[in-house]
Length: 536
Ligand code: GDP
Image 1 (cartoon, rainbow, N blue to C red):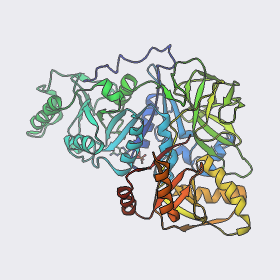
Image 2: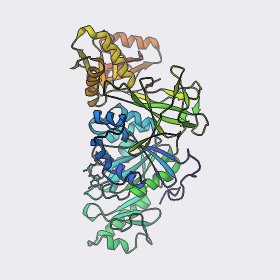
Image 3: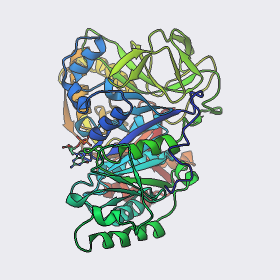
Image 4: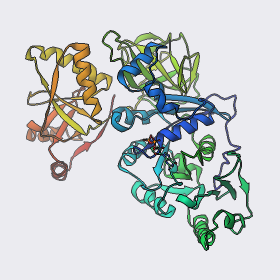
């Protein structure tokens, strides 16, 4: 193992609840194997008995609690939003980043609540579009990334080629921890470059690895029996040993370097190395930047911020669950917290803790944990809760939507009601709302198309507002800003029909094409165009 810190011995002191926590997410392109890997990770944690449950439970008809009802109704799992499990001395909080068709801004925002991420790459495909996007969101906060190259049991690309692609397309240094022995049909296991140990695919004991004398060891001839195969592999591994960067903990923690593991989630192979790696080198909860100061995770007073709201689709239940990341202190059931935005107290009488597939009432939670707080609309995305201190956490941003639609109200009499409802939906983070300066109808923006359906259904069900969408000529939007207010005013005056205000009244420039955006950017050099905006 080239790691400075040996993952098998470096786990935190069990007595220290903050140091033993690892809060992470998996980022990947659809079909790279995120679900499969999640199942296997949960198996290691002993959290579920049977692999396959993560997906199967999504379709299960449950009657156990109201929350289960919400999941059934929405077809989107609240339960799998956070999965907590223990492994070794660590408590892992795995935050689900909704993918596939339920890909939305929540997916991005979840990444503001983690301390590290596992990037899963399909060994045949390399870096794909969604992975890249999610990686860029991680980079905004320099989140350390651990890479898992998956599906080595299938025909795969040359490992050097994959590493090269990570380095070039993501501008991220790579440090392979293991190296695959064969690929596709000849995939026989992995070689731990630092520890000189082999993990065999055909091993009876999944946990066992065998020591080897070095690359010359005859074991490799046995594992790669085709003529010339073992020697060709030796050359490759030698190059990996000599040519790749050694693991550097500081560079990893700063988000500049990624340790790389190879394996097959489906075969549950290489997953133990990955989880040991996370336990060993992934950071415990980080300090969080707030408006007045940085909050250390070990501070005694409880603080936290809301990064996601899940609402009930059932009009009879206006309840919502707010997901809050605890940033410091100890959250206990029944405690009173202060909602800084309103200055009002909020009672945490039933915070929910997530143990894999089951939700339990939390008795206590620490920095890095995520609790679900049932409420009736009191909590919004970006809200800070404290034990009294007047501080607001930074860093739950808005991301420029990728789909823009104009709302068409079929009943013009209800325009005011629509405005209020959209305001509410915007605050909940369902969609982003843009009000064109020229007074034309509201434009909503989303990151994933499913959000449009969710908005339409909820406006109908909860507010009795039937709406339709109309295309708009705009396809891109950017928040704008400038050091000189006069320059900003000049720009806005020159682009009146392309300007809108977001929920907070911040100016947004809407462009018809990427080309026209670029054109304006080149012309107006004093204007800053940004695709990310802080909530506060
Ligand atoms: P997700 O969309 O990223 O959650 O991907 P899934 O975990 O659902 O996997 C997509 C498909 O790839 C499924 O058919 C999996 O069985 C398959 N798959 C996942 N991991 C592996 C692997 O290591 N090897 C092979 N051969 N197939 C895999």
